[in-house]
Amino acid sequence: MQSDLMQSLIGITDTIDTYMYTYCLVILLIAAGIYFSVRTKFVQLRYIKDMIQCVTEKKHVKGEHSVSAFQALMMSTASRVGTGNIAGVSTAIALGGPGAITLAPATSRVSRQQSRLAAPEPLSGCGSCALWEAQPLL
Image (cartoon, rainbow, N blue to C red; front, side):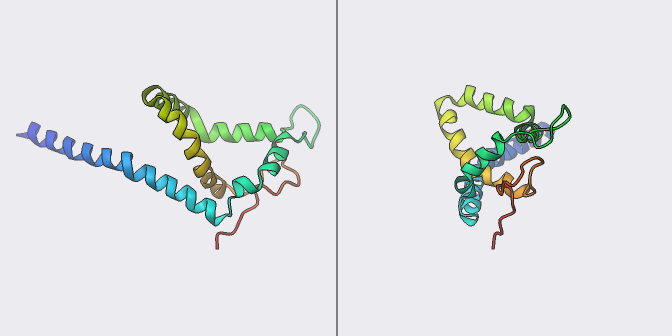
């Protein structure tokens, strides 16, 4: 009796899980990325020159204990991405093949805007770069 109940609950949650992660989540993430890109007037494309300038500029403070803009970017990326996402991407590529390789960069370009809206403060050592200034949504 209890085994049948467990099997039916597993079946129900598996159906919900499959539907949510196959359709809803992907559509929601892509829609949110497109929405924020449009609302911020495609800041990821407008400021590409400033992004490259910020990452490639030299250290403002000389010495061993200073951090360049590129080092700050890499530390920030490492703290956000983590090994779980790296393992997830490699698993997706292994299981999904060429489709995952094609869709991953396209999705990341669209959803990249979400992390910029979450951290609008300027990066340390970014100098006069206006890349990380908060953009009003209204």
